[in-house]
Image (tube, rainbow, N blue to C red; front, side):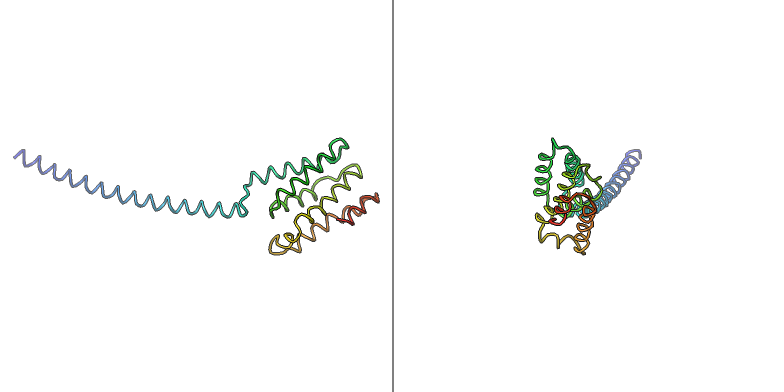
Length: 172
């Protein structure tokens, strides 16, 4: 009788284990489905976040380098190096995001104290236009906005009292 009870309990125990194993397998399948959904969501998020393949950290570094070089235009000792560095930055980074950074930095940056630095700043707008060329027309759904913004930045320099700055603005 004891053997029968043990064998019955063993059978019940094995049955319970089988059922638990099935539920664990089903839970694992559900877990895999959830993981795959999360991975697809991460991929979509990354694609939206990095439209052009440029990471936000790279864009922040680009902004910092560009504004730092703009600041160095004020000093006669660092002006030539700053101009070369800015031109190199613009040549190497010709994405839409980089263009936005250049234009926002030029419009937000306090104008230089000397007329030489203001002249170089307005020359940069012309240089950006020269480097980007036809890409300016591909800057988004409304390329006219970008061109108007460049003209507005240039217009500020026409209010300057120095003729050299006016000439540089006209050329830009």
